[in-house]
Image 1 (tube, helix red, strand yellow):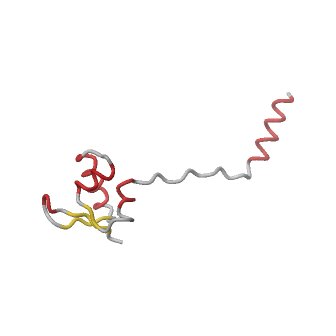
Image 2 (cartoon, rainbow, N blue to C red):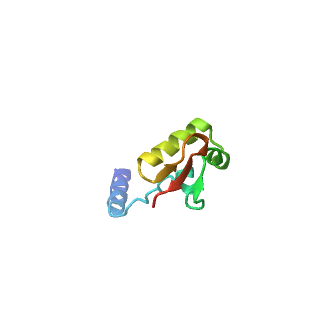
Image 3 (cartoon, rainbow, N blue to C red):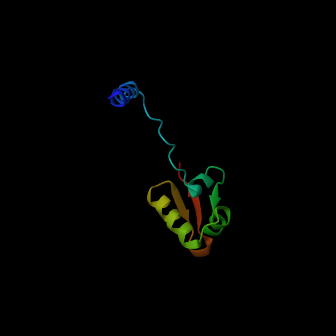
Length: 83
């Protein structure tokens, strides 16, 4: 009985306390564009140690979300931050 009462008191005491929120995960590729004006897929691969497939997939996602812009075609493609 005493344990239940103590648990109930703790629960009431903590009910008004907000739980700390974990920081949003940072995307390593998106973070690169805070310090680099433009990058190729090869440079992204080297800087993040990701495979070409993963780097390409993430770059396409960032372009679709409007965060990055792709300029050029094929091997001459470069990615730039839009904002």
